Length: 219
Ligand SMILES: [Zn+2]
Ligand SMILES: [Zn+2]
Image (tube, rainbow, N blue to C red; front, top):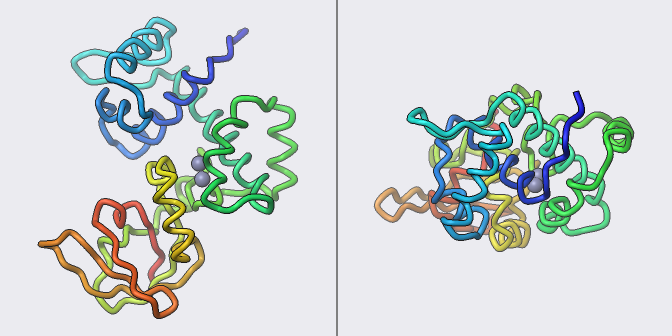
């Protein structure tokens, strides 16, 4: 069946839908507006178009990808993550996501397959997020918010929704909070919604809202 390639805007929506649905998070217009940096009416109009084109369904059960939407979303995510790897040696880690965001819409299936092989068939992106179909690879990693004080852990993953925040990525990179880095959990202050971790003996304080997106491996 001949399939029309969705526009760049639609592909951006599809990748967010993919992440939210994969994580069993509800897809809510206001959340999409916030993540995409657009107005709520813009989101509503785009969702209507997506429903008309058979990519999503909207009813009393909420807003969900159709099978066709899900497949297209997986394709966009995979291309995005491969593009991040492609530029890893050339750009700062915190800029990979933004650049891949532009490139992900352009590459052909043939180029995509070749890049995947050339990269050695990665199971995650450079931020530790799973390529579609490789969710098992990250299943054991837990959010920093669940780690007790004093535990030594290895950072493995910065969640896709945190990737959307460029300032946050730059901060994490500057502080050395990156995949494969070992850190020690320090003080946890629930009333303040903060944790402090030790990165190479340097304390870094994070809010729960950020810490829940940083996944670590415990030994
Ligand atoms: Zn990304
Ligand atoms: Zn990534």
